[in-house]
Length: 477
Image (cartoon, rainbow, N blue to C red; front, side):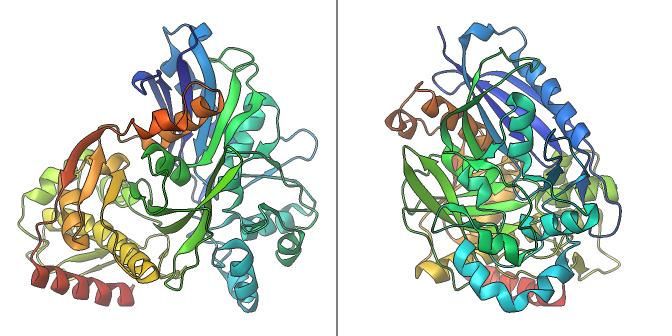
């Protein structure tokens, strides 16, 4: 019986593969890490072959011991704005991929600032190095010739199947996609100087679009039936199918998305509009705000400063002190994202004294992650005219109870954590199973597995004081 879906989640630091059964239970799991490269300050790159090498490793680990005859479909989700230049004919990489965190094109964005209103109107996005278009322009200038553009999903799908395509959720992150028309824009390509760069075909987020061939761990002919950018996949995996439902994912960066249904949202508060997915012929959109550094801050404390040995050590260390001792950490190591959009900002630590310990730094780091989300949720409340009533949370750092309690206190709303935190991979699997006919949308609506709700416990005066102190620190960053 065909009853298993393979979900491939390609992230910034590694690749996760889950095998899900009809009841969305995990029957297999695999993971493989790959290195990042930092050739200059503010530059972040992936070596394409290193990234790809992690995929079959994770696939083989996840599918080991399972009957491939049971596999129904493959779903793919990935980091979004990361940009590849591929050979026009062979689709071989011509350069290292430029990662979404990379800030090398800040000057290019600044030089185009007079065009930002028109660009934002068409794309729903601000003009920022975060997105793909100026990365593609940098590659076009560096290579001196046209190439085939790819985001991570496009690169992976070509390696898996030979097809050259993407979906609207990924296309809408490039600054080259007209959000209203639902298509690539020749005008935008010309504005960014990439008119001769070839762009992939755009297919729905759910539905069979290609077949895997010659991939270790997968049977030949397995349909690829689900594609989505990681944050949109997490929104789907959290069961936020209706307008007004929202989720917060703590990953390398952290991202808040609210489903706005068939309406393209507009923000006056520094948030962005994005396409959530296209399913069953219907396009859904989302209002989004993202902070570039979240889990990456914990990794920096571990690898850069050495104050913890494992990421999980940060919670007990932070709990060992009642507060941060006046220390504030602004995680702007890759600039400030929504709602500030300051590419030149840098990570900042304030309030150090001789009494500051690594425990205070750990607690201030968790507080900094939570405050970054509070900035986004305040902006979202301003756009909506009212705060959200609740929020669903996921991602690796959502296992940190202290972080979630700090977050609930700052937002003054309940946070709902599902029993499965890997909702990005889950969403990709759900889209694939839906596209292959394994289940219906009604089946998926009944599947949300709640683990715990974090109710706000903060005192209003203390929260207000903390927010004031935070905003002064952000101004300094």
